[in-house]
Image (tube, rainbow, N blue to C red; front, side):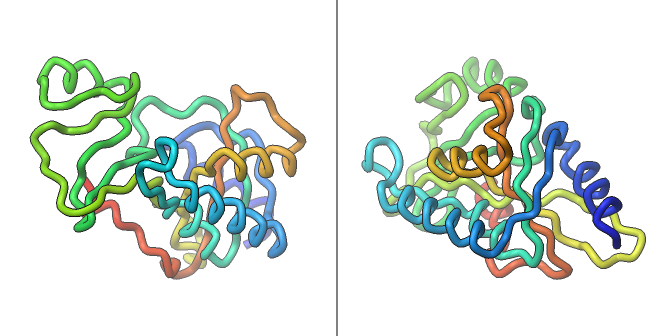
Length: 198
């Protein structure tokens, strides 16, 4: 598949998340630098170091055969999967980011505590062991006439990696989001664990 058709396929796949404004293939050195930035962020933890943090999305995307950085417009209100979840040591869902369409329902149900306008901890779920914040690897369907691209996965960078990706893409405005998009003929080594956390 030529680069133009590949870019178009990726843009179409990501339309379920946001409008893609720019795509740029990452070099091996750029990928390695993003890994080092995410590793440092994970070591610092979340919530001021009180909670472990794992960016499975970035690791999954970077493990793919072909990797792009993308800038997008505003994220759609109902993405295919929460951008951030809190899970216990057995992978049980303890809390999650909520799209706008679910917030009123969850708030009125009274079964969750809002830690921010869009992130909740569920009161009726008792975590087993230590909890951690996870930014998941989000898979979206990718159509290819040749059938040579079967996995399109998205990772959301944390702060330092986001700044680095922005520098690679010409420092777009803060109203634009950045993503790392991985494409592989087979699922990457970092498999999507969404089924265990939702």
